Length: 393
View 1 (cartoon, rainbow, N blue to C red):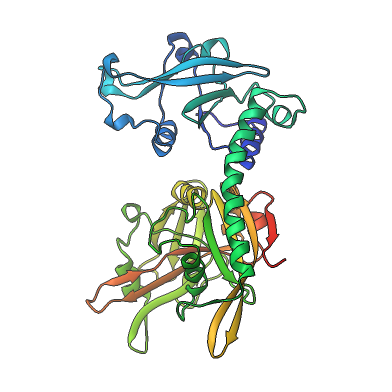
View 2: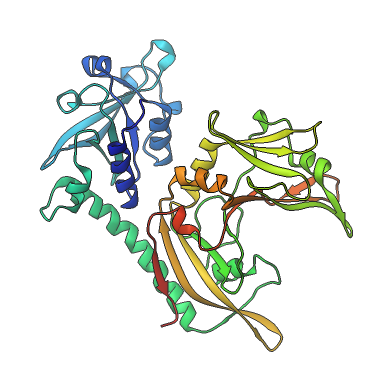
């Protein structure tokens, strides 16, 4: 795909801020003439992740073609169409997509946004449409109505969760379930009836919950992500532990924070290489040097998936009769982080990485991270404007 113009980027950002999830496709001159486009990786992933279609399970040939109900969004009207998804018998069955009638509403190399909502695929020409004006218009139009409907559904879940949190808060302090750093989150999730598990999916109907102690200036957890071992010199957390671990009592472990700004006491530092789009961890030991790698693409995907919508919940810690209790006092509601900001915040040392590796009794290594964390009061640098709520009114 060609590089997006500033105007196209702003339109996508505006849709994202309005809770609209979309993918992009660029019809070339040949594609418009032949009425066929390659279903690129991002398009295939979008359709699969939204449970629309999995090309890898589709047979080849026109007899296996799938048709989706579709609309092309214009300024003042919706054009009812179909979209075909199929794999030809030639060229190894490379996935194909075509929106019927698109050639009358797009020029070569226009950027087309695809939005799946309510069992329907919507296509809008981001190059030609004035997205911001249509969404903000006082007069009804198809794009404004679609965005409003998506927002209404998104807001209904947030309102439901906010009501539950307010009810919990008004019932008074909740006794901590355990004595650990994770207790503030686990206690809240249990009170909400959420099963504690290691799933990477958001906690409550698509909303991620992140609880923290209000009286601590701790960094906030964004997500955990192991390196790309195939691209890395080291191939496991055990190798990292062997190279940089230390003895603490009966434990051999590596618990440390790594930043792009300074080397830590283990001689570790992060480096962002924008030319090859990688985050690299480096040791000051010459025989080791660069030892693990994360691709920025993977980190962006984890960020967007984990924090599509998040409640950051602040809690006061109380000691009552020798036991620890939590008062959940406020919520900051964020949506749609901006991946490009993630890179800037890494470079500035505002986002850092924590290793949490410990030797197990069997001699292996148990890794709780690596955890990517953001400094306190810095959410506004990564997310569009948030909403803040007080629970104890």
